[in-house]
Length: 133
Image 1 (cartoon, rainbow, N blue to C red):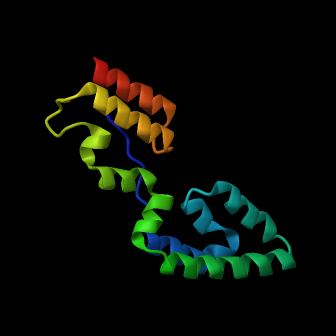
Image 2: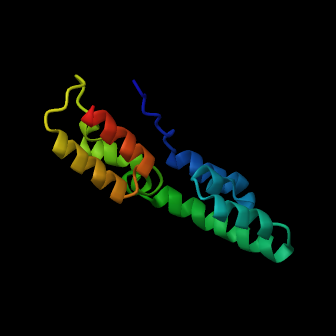
Image 3: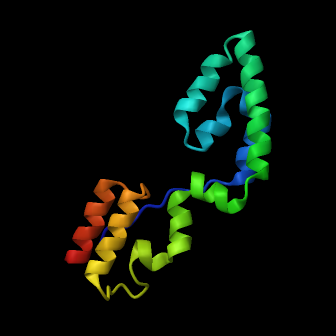
């Protein structure tokens, strides 16, 4: 049976501390899954003007991360965990007993997750095939 591999949950305080101490190099952006922004920080840090910009931006990021509510942080940076908690574990992973009461409803729920970007098309197809088996 295929296991669903969960992404590790990102922590708001860790992200804020990375922004404060290593924000000049964009480490907090890499941690939050924003690789493009992280690379931008790294490239900008190569110049004096860029260092000034990334230094100020990382301080702004630090305070915005600290002031962001846990719910907003999870919705933005941990969407798979946020939706799993919001919609219930049965929404993402089937019922605890492993039986599915209404396959059509479960497929519609999976489709909603796919359309909202929580799961990939491959995950959608894999879970759909599992429900139909």
